Length: 139
Image (tube, rainbow, N blue to C red; front, side, top):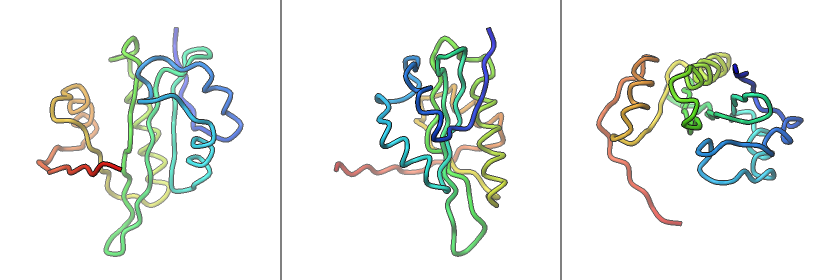
């Protein structure tokens, strides 16, 4: 069975009734999803096999006062049954095109240093890792 990739729009909220495991970190809150997709600087693309969402990627265009906009890839999730079948590549390609259409000239992404699959994926798309320090502050 193949899969389709689509950009999420308000009329697609019912598609999120069936989501495979590990696509999102938590259950989808339709009010939050509606707010996210209503913001023109944010974008989400999903992959579905039939009526099941099997992957998602989301990003935002960051405006910079000292240079052109950049695309920040905020999250990427694929259900394990669909790993290494081109889902992540198609989702990223769609996000890159969306970012470029909004003037983004650079792309940023963060991932855990132990996530070798993600690092390999990003390298194949021309994104090269740098050592950075990530600090988290609890709410």
